[in-house]
Length: 211
Image 1 (cartoon, rainbow, N blue to C red):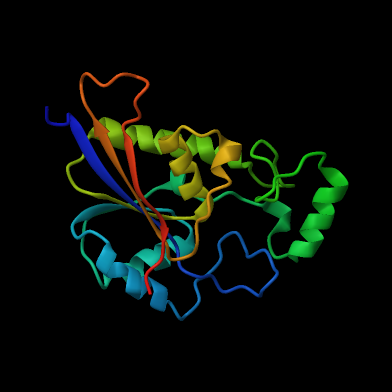
Image 2: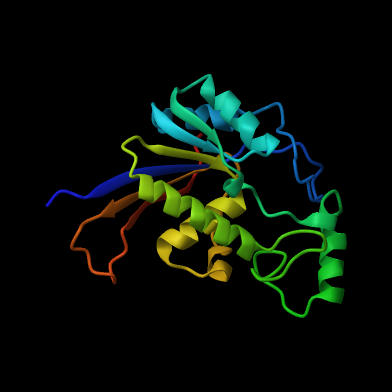
């Protein structure tokens, strides 16, 4: 039986940002000039995809550089793909942030600064990101597009997207490694008679970087 719906997703973490080592970059950080990793990634991306781009500058600039190498069917700026906001911690040293966490937060996460439900001062929680990308995924699936879907966003966003696909909770999703200029691929494959216990998601590649 042919699939009722088959949608391919290609999720890209933006390129390296211009930030001093050991610092939390600005919320709307800029890309570095050297983006050879993005050039190397381009041959692995689909032509004629629907592009969904976070409105933050680093994602928009990543899309602009890739647009010179591959073509898009459509391009959409998508606020639901924005990254977690670390509020008052942006532009601070990581060491100072960890001191703040030790003093003011009772729980910690082994990979992230905070557990998914905790909010940095003046910022958002990862749980917020997890919920908003769920809305994005639902909307794409409901539209049942025929073209590949190319998402250009952020590490946290892609972790949350994978969490939904793999039926992980938000804290478990934070455990996934997503690097700059990396590609993560998954296919949504749904049949009319699929049991609820079977996931419609086929995870094909996670955190792939080209050399």
